[in-house]
Image: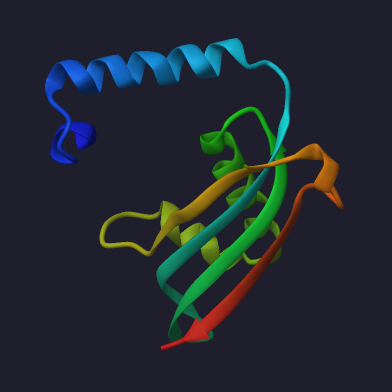
Length: 118
């Protein structure tokens, strides 16, 4: 549905989804992913905050990498659990997810979060 709104026709969207599913199912190895995400509307110390999230993780695909970054960040910042609550709720959206060549590997499963007071 989202692909159709982005200018893809129904057949093109279905073909693209098929290729993405095939790509995911063929990859069984873990890759390194650099994830950047932004969050809006979190209550922290009684004040609304936004956040910037950055992480380097091992995962099979971009979606798994984003989930892993969020799960790791939640351990140190339980305020992020507000994004799982009922609507209206805070949100975290991926801004950029890139596969990192293994030659540039410095550490894995590391996440940083910066709070921005509104």
